[in-house]
Length: 141
Image 1 (cartoon, rainbow, N blue to C red):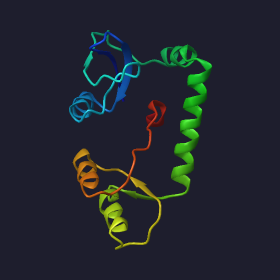
Image 2 (image 1 turned 90 degrees about the vertical axis):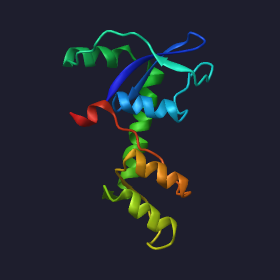
Image 3 (image 1 turned 120 degrees about the vertical axis):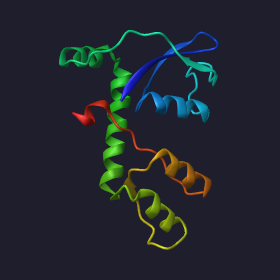
């Protein structure tokens, strides 16, 4: 995960987390990146210093969050865990299995797994309802 400092055409500054630089570009192109203040989709990366991740820095980041942000993050993590506990993990076969369920070729049930951006786009075009589960930065540690 990478954090970008972002700025909209109305000069609102905010941060966004992305899998990598290409992920930001793809989401921006699809109109999925917008300003949380004015909802403008005209968003650009702002100049920022490189980040070096250390345990001390991660503690400072956690301390810099307000109570509301910590509570929201905890609720998001709890929801993600509940969704995973009540669904079948299908790994990289997610797109195929979701399509089978959608078209009645497999029993309806909750599933989760991985899909490439291209697979996700094709699922959306086919009318298959799905949503990405949040991945938290410390999930990879």
